[in-house]
Image (cartoon, rainbow, N blue to C red; front, side, top):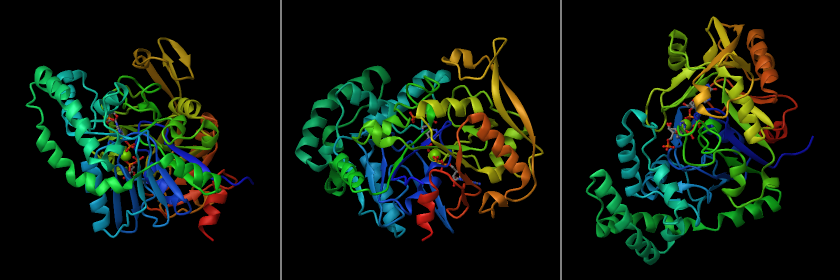
Length: 440
Ligand code: GDP
Ligand code: IMO
Ligand code: MG
């Protein structure tokens, strides 16, 4: 079997699919893990034993001391939050000396957060339900060519020069449009000084580092944040995040070409959740949705908000498979379905009187889509100790088989609990060698 040395891991629903868990599991044998988009809107949970880590910028490979962890050029980084995140990890005995930051990544500044909050307030009942981390305004400034890049963290004079240039306009927008008092230049410079001292030495040409590792045949993981349906182009616009969350962004967001990112593992829950506003065809507002929320502990990692819950949507998964070129699936939280009498799986939609099996192009149509379900008998067994496919009860196997068939992509990995150890690698999957190596 061909050895896979580079693998992109992306969310294939609306985020929070369990990417952090899957990446931590695979990173035990990875030489490098790179984030390529998003910022601290991400909340990736890693659990081993009694330890729970919630990562926002830092790649989920950080718990493995030998793994290089990179924040790629496609990211937006809040230096103040990153320093806190690193301090927290160090306090808990996690070495962060393997972390590097792309000089080309963009900085999320205090005024971006203020603008994010002010925008949402102004939108009132039309709000997006952002994480309030300043993601949209930071990416907007990047595209408007008035952002501050992470390279400035290593050059205090440049940082001061750029901030002096951009702050007057930011303050004008804040004051004139939103009635916000704005920010004082000297105060901001003083606020950021410790972050520059701490992060400046970590800034480097991460693109070259990845290229060198790949040329040397090292194992590289690309860590996606958010999910396919939150993608700025392909998601449920405008209820999306402001970055490209699909696998292709792993190349442009780290400085590689498309041929380097041709193995893509899509992470999906065995049901569906969404935080924030926007359409969600299989959302279940009845008791079943509440059961999923309670059993799955579906509360946001970044904001603590209750997640909206519903059944697995194969229409969404097929769409995510197409826009990402998925070559395998990781199905997480299968254990959460134990005890449900009936398990539903949406195989198509009825949209304005027509049966369709594809995801509609615009969200106007989506709000007219009724999911068409196939129902499966549930199971009562606790799955949390299953370590092979054969350990799963027949009813669970039947559900997974139907899921795989209707999505049309192989299941590579099944997760039956939050802990690293609660993971099943499927026989013959593209990552079988990866995990075998882990057990050497
Ligand atoms: P991410 O953003 O995709 O990394 O996902 P989050 O960390 O935001 O949310 C996933 C949640 O589910 C976290 O609390 C994980 O610890 C937990 N989790 C991951 N996989 C499993 C699983 O297979 N079973 C259960 N019960 N919990 C899981
Ligand atoms: P991870 O990486 C789930 C959602 C927000 C909101 C929309 C826009 O943990 O899966 P933003 O702050 O990005 O401008 O918010 O996107 N969102 C997420 N939902 N998981 C995430 O990240 C998310 N990051 C952003 O709730 O609806
Ligand atoms: Mg999350």
